[in-house]
Amino acid sequence: MLLEGKTILITGVRNKWSIAWGIAEAAAKFGANLIFTSQTARECEETRRLVSSIGDYEVYELDVSSDEAIEKLFETLKQRSVRLDGVVHAIAGAKAGDLHADFLYTSREGFASAMDISVYSLVALCRAALPLMNEGGSIITLSYLGSERVVPGYNVMGVAKAALEASVRYLAHDMGPKGVRVNAISAGPIKTAAARGIQNFSSLLNMISEKAPLRRGVTAADIGNTGVFLLSDLAGGITGEVLYVDSGFNIMAI
Image 1 (cartoon, rainbow, N blue to C red):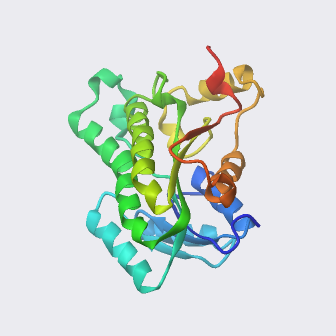
Image 2 (image 1 turned 120 degrees about the horizontal axis):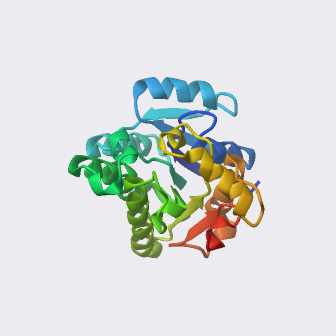
C-alpha cells in the first residue's frame, strides 16, 4: 500500500478513458485518499458518478483559468483541515482551429489560451497547494514527446508541453527546499477524448506498435502505475524530471 495515509488531489478526470482516471484508479488501489476537481458543475456530476466506482471521494468544481477559483478551492480545503501529499495536474487544452492548422498559423489568442490552460495552471496550482503540502509531497503533470520533436498535428500543444516541462524544472527548484517534488510523465499516445482532436492520431498509435522497442502502445494503467511510483516515497529522490512511459519509443531515431 504505497500511498496508504496519503491524500492526493487529482485534476482532469474527464471519463474512464482519461489518463487522470488511470492514475486515480491506481492511487486508490494503493491506498490513497483522493480528492478530485472538475472544470464545471456539469463535469463535477459526471466525475462523481465515475469515482463512486472506486470509493466515496469529494469532487470540487475548479476553473483553472481563474485565480479566484483556485484560491477559493484551497481556502475550502484549508478550512477543512486538509493536508496534501500529492497533486496530479492532468489539464491541457487548445483551440481546435489551432490544432488543425499548421503551427505557423496559430492565432495569438489560441497561443495564449493553450499556455494558460496547459502550463500556467500548473504554476497556479503549485503556488496554491504549497501551504497545504506535507514535507515529502509530490506533484506530477503530464507531457508528451511532441514537446521536443515535431509531431504533425500536435502543433501549439507541442510548444505548450515544452513550456510545461521547463516549468517543471523551475518549480522543482523553487519547491525543493520545502520538501516538495515536481515531475512530469511523458506518456505515449493513448486513445482519450482529447487525443481525438489530433490529426492522424491513429497513425501515431500504429507507429508506436510497429517501432517502439516493446512493440506495443501504453495504457492508462501503465501511466497510473508510474504515477503511483512518483507520488510515493519510493521516488523521494526524484524531482525536476520528465519520465517517459511510451514503450521506449522516445529512444528511437525514427
